[in-house]
Image 1 (cartoon, helix red, strand yellow):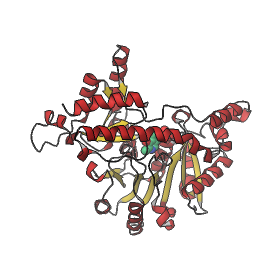
Image 2 (cartoon, helix red, strand yellow):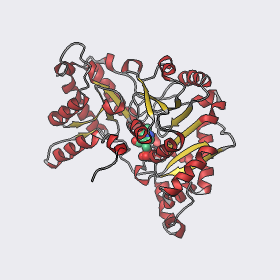
Image 3 (tube, helix red, strand yellow):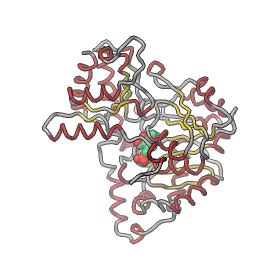
Length: 404
Ligand code: PLP
C-alpha cells in the first residue's frame, strides 16, 4: 500500500535501529550499556501510585472525561504553574490536557501554523520538532550552537533568522539533548529581542523544568517581560519529573483562542486524555515532587561528575561543558582523538555520528543516540540515568574508545 507524501517525508527514528542492535547484542549475552534512555529508570513516588490505586475504584476513572481535561485539573495545572514558576498568568489563559507532551505540542503546531509558516528552532533541538513541522507543512529555520558556548544560542544569530514569515520560535530549557538550561541573563535578553517582533509566538517546552541538579533553577523570558505571555504557549506534563512517561499526560497552557482551537481538534481526534491518571493527579501535591526528586538529582549530579572526571583524566577538558539539567549530555566527537579515524580530510564536514555510534556499540557495547537528529552533526546524546557503577564502567569504555 502506498502511503501519502506527508508521512513519507517524516524521518524514522534512528535510535530504533541502534536500539534493535543493542537488544540483539544483549540477547546474545554481550554486555551492553544502554545510554539512550529518555526517561528515569524509577517508579513514580509512592504518593502518586497510591492515588492511582484509589482512583481504580471509581466508575468515572474508566469513562470519557471532558475533551480538554478534567476541569479541576485544568485549574490545578494553572495554580501549580504559577506557584512553581512564581509567575502570574493572564486571565485569558486556558489549559488543554493531552496524551503526553508530544501530543500537546503536535496539537499546538496543528492549530497555530499554516503551510509555509516559518518556525525558529535552536539546535540542538528535540528530534520531534522538525518532524512535526514537516507534517503540518511549516518550515524550520535553525539557529546553530556548539559545545564551546555550552549549546547556548547566540541571540544575534537568532535575530537574523526572524523574517516576516516567522510564526513561532520553540525554546526548550532545560534542553533535550544538551542537558543545560539558559541563564537568567539570556532569558532577559531573549525577552528584549522578542518584544521587537510582535508577530512571533513563543512556544516554551518546559517538560524538564523541575529536573535541574545545579542551581540556579531555570527562569524564563516571561519573568522579565510578563506582557509576552499574550503570545506564549507553555508545554509541560508529568512524563519526566514524575517518572511517568507511560501514563501519557501532557499540558498546554496558552491563551484561550488557542486552547479552544485545540479542544476542537482534540475532540475530533484523540478525545480527552486518560481519565484515571487525571483524577489521580487532582489530589497530587505538586510540592511533594521536591523530595521525590532529591535523590534523583543527586544521582544525575554524580554521573555528571563522573563524566567531568573522565574528560579531565583523559586530557579532554577543552571539550567538556557543565551539564546541569534534564538527564542528558551531548558529546562532541569532533574534538576527540578518535575522530581523526573518520575524517577524510582536514575540513571534512561530513556527519559521522551514526557510524561512530554504531562502532561504539559493536566494539565497546555502549549505546548512545547519534546527534544528527538533534541538528548537531558529529555528536551523540548520552543519558545520565544509568546506575552509578554501570555508568562509570560505560564512561571508562567510552573514553578508551574516544582516545583510541
Ligand atoms: N519535549 C521534550 C523536549 C522531550 O524530550 C519530550 C520527551 O522526550 C517531550 C517533549 C514529550 O514528552 P511526553 O513523553 O510527555 O510526550
